[in-house]
Length: 126
Image (cartoon, rainbow, N blue to C red; front, side, top):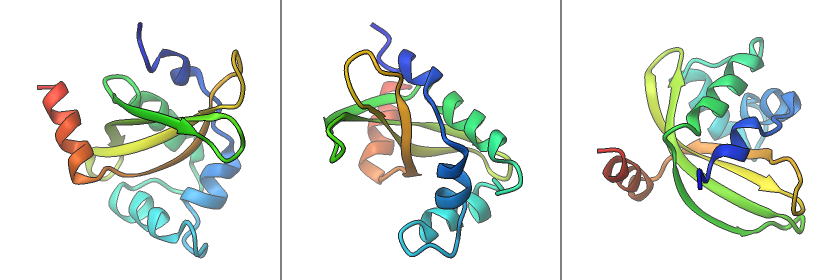
């Protein structure tokens, strides 16, 4: 079974991108925003470009695992290459949630991949 298939059609709320991952003034999201804006080249003015890249990141991504979410659903983590406007391919980890069986997945967060995650991704895509 194609582990990432249902997530490629997952919902990404524009506010999750504009008000969180691309908002540098947030204490909890500022470091991620600096990475996605300054390193990758995404912008708050073009959240659709970022959303498209996040969906595309799942193609060829490595499934890292799942765990129970605080919301009661299940979070799924994937490590893969994000095609960024500024730097080309950058390895990130994205997290998606399925709130209940049969529900459409929704995007939770993304961050630069940790070294061990990059090693797993690179080994499986060699």
